[in-house]
Image (tube, rainbow, N blue to C red):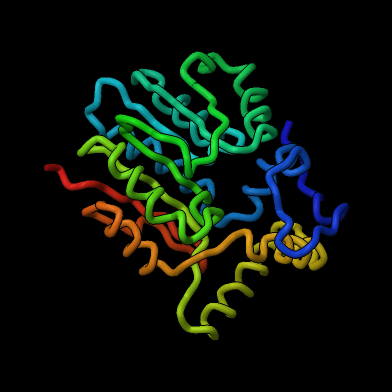
Length: 245
């Protein structure tokens, strides 16, 4: 049963103190579905893109897998494809929650869970790399090296699916889109107190960059194709591919 997120009604963290601990893991599935626009659309698009691959075995590495929603939905959507699913996260609480969800499903043998910092983890021979709302939590200096290593790990006809919170160059536009995002959260039942406390907790922890800056990082890491698949105000999803050669 999904637990309702009332975390920031109950706690008042200090500036930049957001962590993926047991408290967050307990309510994470509700938190992300009510906090991230187009979250369900991102989950739906993954099996469609994966089904287009002709790999006999589709190896999927989810960097920042949290509670495993993407891997679980992919396995359930493609029951007749041979999948190797690897979930990587540095939060043991998140991995424990993922394992709890998997325990009641027959896809459990397909999923390997790894506790690691994604800045150090070495993926290999991947058909798909997932980074949904993960890169934004990696410090900016570490992102180029991480993306370069990911690019080298993907098969030439594979891809990376990246979803991120994004910023905008014009301050007035950025402020307006942030306010539209807060209105989205209000419609989903979050109070002004919860919104303010979470914003403060994420300050300096979540560092977004613009769509163009993300695209430049992807290309400098070695990716040849960068497609903006979805965008909702200050959230974006990219499909990033290597060249076929």
